[in-house]
Amino acid sequence: MMRAADLRRRLKRWVAPGLRFFTGGRRLRPDAGLRLHGQRNDGRPGAMAELYALAWPITAGMLGETALGLVDTKLVGGLGPAALAGVGIATMLLFVGYAMIFGLMRAVKVRAAHAVGQGRPEDAVRYAEAGVVIGAAAGVVLFVVSRDVSPMLSFLRIDPTMIPAARDFVAARTWGAIGTCAGAALIQYLQGVGDARAPMVVGILGNVINAGLGYALIYGRLGLPALGVRGAGYATAVSEMLELGVLLAVVVPRARRGPRPALARRAALREVAALGVPTGLHFVLEGAAFTTFTTILGAMGAEQMAAHQIALNTIRASFLPGVAISEAASVLVARALGRRRLDEADGVARAALLLGVGFMTACGIGFALFGASIARVFTEEPEVVAVTRRLLLVAAVFQTLDAVNMILRGALRGARDVRWVALVGTTVAWISIPGAAFLLGRLLGWGAFGGWIGFVFETTIASALLWWRWSRGPWRDAHGARATEEAAPLSVPTMG
Image 1 (cartoon, rainbow, N blue to C red):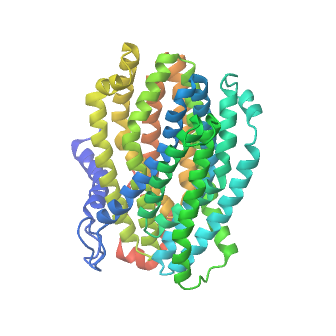
Image 2 (cartoon, helix red, strand yellow):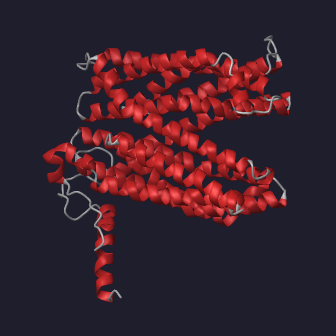
Image 3 (cartoon, rainbow, N blue to C red):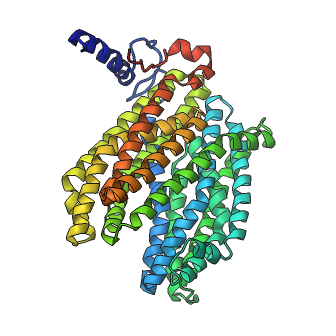
């Protein structure tokens, strides 16, 4: 039996590194410039101020991306349930199609931020060019394969009444696939060089155009033809192409004013692909795990599925800001490591964890206290309300862990340790999420509640592994003697 003194020593060995991490660490030099608030010693804003300045426009931009799908869904609601369901299926299919590109474009952000940190911002433009080329090529491929997705929908056993609407919406919306994919590269580039507001403004304008034009083309207003669900798709395609045009108008003049990049275009393409492909595959495979999870829940009854959808839409209120903080951390970590300042990268991670964990924990408390009231906003069905309340209690448990998981993903991507993030994220997601839905939800009869327990497993395991990687990973040794002299590595000791 372990003595009390031994237990205290072991607890101290585990807790002390965490305390040093969140208090800045005693061994850091006094001029390390790791302040969370106020200014650093070199006059730049503190890590928390930089994070906030980047994260809130990214949050607004993500809400705009979500709003595109919500507006399309709302506008076609008047066409009947088959059209509404068809657009929902089409939106899910398009998400899977775009996931690889959106993940790949994260490399543009990291490479651009790293170049800025190294004092070569002109080379960041090359990464934007590489992203646009890759995005345009991907957009052409998506356009070609989306002319008629009826065979794919039939293979997936989609209700035949939904297929015409889903087919028409996909075919119409992918006229803007080049705008979506190439525009994603420019958005990531702008965020990487520290301008998150321009993409936010462009996204808001795109949503306004999409809503107005969509209503006119769906129902035949303002002298335009009534095209039904195809009208919704065309409106979104037009808005996405216009957004690309505005983003180019923002980026191109800036690039021309700066010095000529020294980085070759082929080298930029290779570097973007090297970082982006693992992240893109991670997005696709993780999305497939979640789709499998949803399919398993769908066989458990309408009430279980309805509760799942209500709870999922509710937790997005905390999820999107958490993702935005992660994306901002990715930029600032890459910039710090470009300057070979491992101490600053640790400061960014610390500030991001404090901000993200604090926000998402507060949301979790709200979900636990007001779960039933939240559910009644969407439905008065007693069983759906009861299941939703239990799901939101589970969400309250994993909110904090999910914040750690997401933020350390972003920080490690900023450190260019993308393969580890992809491997951990994909493996843990497939084991935990569909696995819990099948074993706990279906076999044990716990329903959606059992499936959601998988999120607790996923976030617990992933956050522990990612924390170990951030604290002890070999990426830390790749940033030179200066970094290790100015900031001692944060270690997680082992028991025994």
